[in-house]
Amino acid sequence: MLKVCNGEEIISGGQRVHVPELLTERAQACGIDVNTIKAYLDAFRYGMPPHGGFGVGLERVVMLYCALNNIRKTSLFPRDPTRIAP
Image (cartoon, rainbow, N blue to C red; front, side):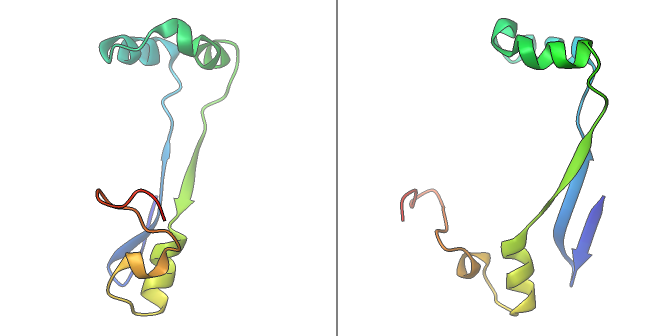
């Protein structure tokens, strides 16, 4: 799902991977100790249904609605590589 306003993405969504074997394989490939995510993997082994969701970029919506040229102008505490604290 992708919703666009004036050529800009404001809502995106997706389906989570819910196959425990694939999740285990990818975790191992990324060097993650599978025991640290055992509870998460077990949830899918014992009945967690496939699920997904979406996220709304509220700051992006405000930027487009107010016709601003930079999303940083809509964020109370904008972050970038040189600013990590207000």
